[in-house]
Image (cartoon, rainbow, N blue to C red; front, side, top):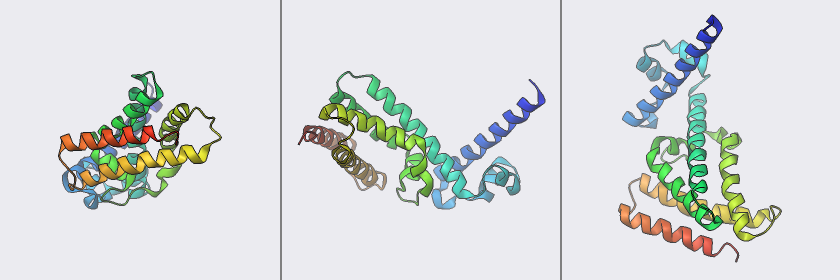
Length: 199
C-alpha cells in the first residue's frame, strides 16, 4: 500500500473514530453532553484535530444523520424485498422503520429531533429522499396510478409517517404502552391506512 493510500485510510479511520466517539458520548450522557472537546478527550486527540474533519458540532450531527438514513434505507430495502405484493411490502417497510427507531434510538433522535434539536440540513440528504421514494413508489403501486398524482401519494405517505413517527416518539420519551400493546397499535395503524389508500 502506497503512502497516499495509507494517509487516506488513516483519515477515514480517524473520521469514523470521531463519529463513534460522538455516538458513545450521546449513549452515555445524552445529546446535550456532546461537544467537540469531549469527543477530542474521548479519542485522545486535541480539539483542533477534530476541527480538521468537522467544521463544528453541526457537521458531526449531519454525518450521524446521514449514517442513520443510510442504515434506514438498507433496512427498508431488505424489508420490501421479502414480499411480493405492494401491500405486504408497505407494511413490512413501516415495521422495519419502527424496528430501526428502537434498534438505533440515538441515530433516530438526531434524524428527527426526538428529545433534541435535529440537524437542519438533513432534508438535503439523498438518502432521505431515497427512503421516501421507496415507500411512495409502493403506495403508487397500491393506488394503481401514475406518479403524477403526487398530492394523494404525499398525503398517504405523511399519514403513515405522522402516525408511526408519533407512536415512536411517544415511546422514546417513555410515555407509551407496553411492547405487546405497541405492536397491536402499530399493526392496526398500518393496516388501517393501507385500507384507505384508494379512498
